[in-house]
Image (cartoon, rainbow, N blue to C red; front, top):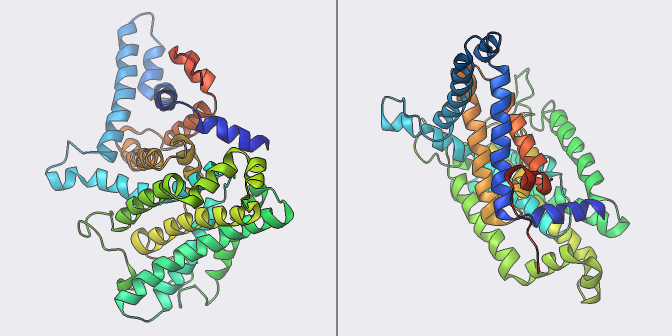
Length: 384
């Protein structure tokens, strides 16, 4: 299929081209920051009288914005003490946790030749099942907590596995099906949050009761920081996906399917069952992202529990070239962009939408390697 070929071409992009694609997106983002800056606009008005003012304004606008992003995402060197200084990196890792988990799920699908763009729906289903267990099931902590996490895995696996089942039995295009499943999940969550199934009693807003304390991911550094133990679950998922794709028999079948479905069928691989298994595992990882949201960060179910993590996960999987360590690095980058956007807007009056533009530009440049090579005069990679 055409979309599978495009994904394979993106995943085969060299690491250097990927790095320069990110760099190019930040350069173009800097141009947009400068254009939108009021001081730059004023200085340009008398450029020929005092050109130095324009260049100074340009430098102050771009460097100030990216310095603010650094303070909001990595380390706040203006903080009064070390404890406040490291708060930004913990926020970055907290944001990176669900993005990376969902990105790992999509990476499994992409490496198998399936263009799964249904992470948003799978996150929602994982969050719904995990949240319901964490809110209503009465059990000791050593039963409730693993059961709530498992429910998130199962919820995402069911929602993803249904896509694989439809593709295996009817030949349905997974792109169209996952788009429709995203909408179904969004509206189903919205409906359930207006019924006694999930809605908190006495509440006029579509919100659930908070999850029980015994079902929550422990906060790693106390209540002043957002980072929770779901971060370690995410790291374990990175190791699992690496083993799955590179060391397991099932992973070999996945990669064979992604490389050549016809040859895989001739080799005796059950294509239909492999489709279901790929999408179930892909959905389970996204469902785990939903569980990390409801048990670790949000602590209540709302219609915004998935945020835009499912969309970000697509870029993260492509940017990481669907390799677990690459997805981890890309997830942390996107977590940093999210965390830094708030400080950039508050301190420099730069619209946070600039970060969305940078993320979109990353997709653009990743999808157009010849453009990146032309911009930076990179040699074309010739494969033997």
